[in-house]
Structure formats: structure tokens, C-alpha cells
Amino acid sequence: MGIEINRFQGEVDEELLCPICSSVLENPLQAPNCEHAFCSACIHEWLSRQPTCPVDRQNITPPQLRPVPRILRNLLYRLLQLTCDNSVYGCTAILKLDALESHVQECEFNPKRPVPCELGCGLVVPKDELKEHNCVRELRSLMQAQQSKLVEVQAEVAEGKFQMSEQKRELQLLKDYMLAMRNANPSLRILADQMEADEVRRWAETLPKARVLRWGGMISTPDTVLQLQAMIKRALSESGCPPHIIQDLMENAHERRWPTGLSSLEIRQLNRRQYENYVCRRIPGKQAVAVMACDNGHMNPDMILEPGLIMIFAHGVE
Image (spheres, helix red, strand yellow):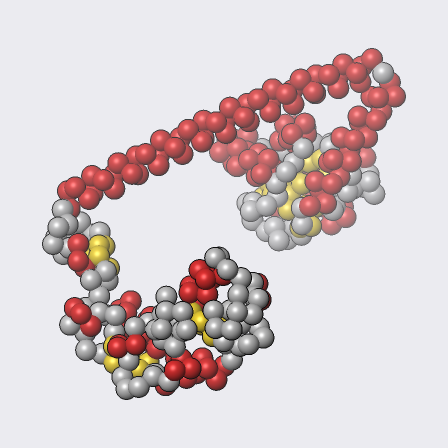
């Protein structure tokens, strides 16, 4: 509906009045052919009853309505001046229409303006509700709402865990079935092995290549720091590492599992020049790299291990 004409200063041109409500146009739209202008709310309500122009009865539909010309908008929003919505509460401001909305939100006479409670509860309440505001009651209500939300979240988490458990169970059944089929059918075994190899290769290619600046910072016995191993294992899982190789990779993070070319400090020092030939993949967020067999077919067999090596460093990984 339009804006009451008695709120405006001086005379208002008839062209700026809505033919339906006889008030000043609010969010005006115009008909496509006759170009008569109406308040948006007024014309949509009118067309919901009869699809004709209220002035000359030409057929129109809601999708045909369009914004009024810029000159008409300028006349409305920049030239007309009117009183604040809160004038009945004491505001004496005279404003242009385009400044009305922002003024009303901040107007000190606005009974719905949010104000902070001064009694210490920290809540923000509408100004006209401040006298009736009870800190204890409102905080109790807020706590109850939070508890209800917490119960809902806990129920969602429980449902999510159940669904995940069901998916893991079904996945395990599928793995068991595939394993049985693999053992019973040699050609299927070859196909499954190739699918797993392709999965590992795709995952490795998602990891950014890394450059090791300080090979001397390698931690060859990470099991002495259990938390470190747990962090690396979690990072592998979160990066999308195929589950069937995570444990193998973590076991291959220790020198006792490394190939002969890396089996001791003395041998590693002799082979140090070959390190630069490794294709290393950065484990996200960690000072560690994955040296995957699928990336390092060019290396000597005594320098690589299936499905790959995990090398953890104190520093020096880019």
C-alpha cells in the first residue's frame, strides 16, 4: 500500500499518486502499454482478482509489470519530503523518501529500535519492550532454546553416526564379496588390483608436489612420538588416501620397513645424491611427504617400496 499523503510537505503531484489506494506511490510499477503507475502491493493484489489495468481496463498480467522510469523515481525519492514514521512518538525529522528507511532504523524515537539491556544480561531487546524485560526469564528462555537446539544437533549426530556405521558395514560386505570373487576368479583378481592401483594413482595426483630442502631433518623412527604418527595418519585420511593403503604407508614411515637403499643412516648418507630424483608429494599441512611407487618408477628398486614411503621431517619441506 502507498504512503499517506498527509505526511508529505507541500502539494504532491497527482502523477505521484496510486490510482488504487490514492496514496503516494510506494515501490511503484507500471503497466506495459498504458504506462499507468501503481504501488507494487496494490497492483499485485488487484491483478490477483482481475487481470486488467485499474484505470483503462487493458489486459495485463503480473510478469508484464515493469519499473517506472528513472525521472519518476527521482521525483519520488529525491524531491518529495515527508515526516518520519516515528513522528507520533516525537520525531520531528523531515526527510527525503530515499533516506527514510535508513533513518527509521536508527531513529531514537523508533519503539522497535534494538537497545542493549542495562541490567547486565547482555541481551539486545526492542526499545518498547525494555520496561517489561526480565533478565532471568529471558536468559532462562535462551538457555532452553539452546538446549533444545543441542538436543536436535545430538540427534542429527547420532543419526549421522548410524548412517555412517551402516555404510561402513555395507562397504565391508562389498569388500568381503570382492575378496571372495578375487580369490575365486584370477581375471577378476587382476581387474581388482588394477582398480586399486588406479585409485592410488588418482589420489597421489591430487597432492601437490613437494621439495625437501633439508634431507638431514628426516625423522626415521617416528614411532617414538605416537602423537606425530597419529597426526600424519589423520592427514592422510583427510586428504582422501585410499583406506586400504593407509596402514601400509604408516608402517613404511619407519626405517625398519624401508628398502635396502634407505635401511640405515650410513647407507642413506651414501645414497643421498639420489634423493633429489624422488618425486615427493606434500601431505597437507604437515612437514611430511609421500614418496609413491606410482610416481617413482624411475628410481632404483632399492630406493622405493610399494605402495610408497612416508618421510617425516622436523623442517625443510616446501
